[in-house]
Length: 234
Image (cartoon, rainbow, N blue to C red; front, side, top):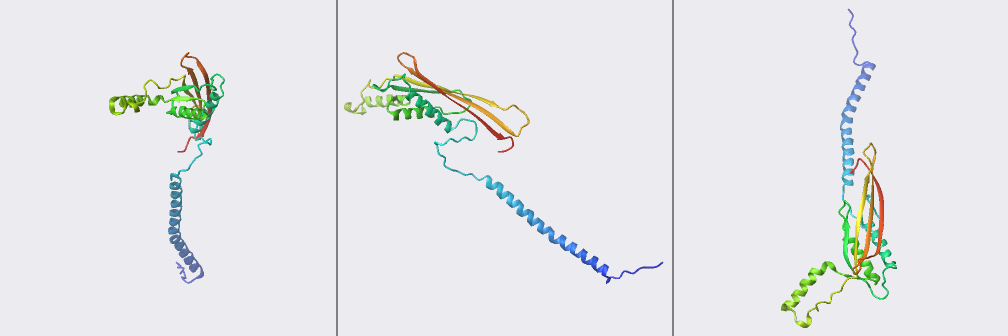
């Protein structure tokens, strides 16, 4: 049997040894480097996520139309107020040249499924009509306070010459009232990437003659809006 002796100093053996050492060095050097790279990428991703969750605030122009979804917002209120105020001021059914009609507001019924402060609509309409100089208004909300103040003045705490005269409050000529309604339609359940929603609003306002009960003026504003948003998101 012949035994072959391997020469450790042969060129082939030296080459194999060098290659093995390079592999070991590469293994030890690439491990920490890859870990550092992965750590940096994770930190950058976390920073981006947290940066997107930071709360921000900016001032908007209340006169500009701005909608984030299909539901009622301040832009809709402005559209309703402007349209109904212009309609009432231009109506030939109400005579305002000789005597300014006196109006008492009995509010707008909210028949929608949303929590909408309809008093904000009537407050803005009242403000616009007062500024026009063609109408006067009775402050119905303060009637209780007016009675309380009159009772206080006549209870002996206020001199007679400084008390308000009884029976001098204005009587209304018209009642301003109305109704806000909505119809909401959602897309049928099915596989889709976006969720679509359609909402229709109808605002009706009327002016009723207190003496005759006749509706002297009436008008309405309609708003229809469709929104679309991704099914996945926040």
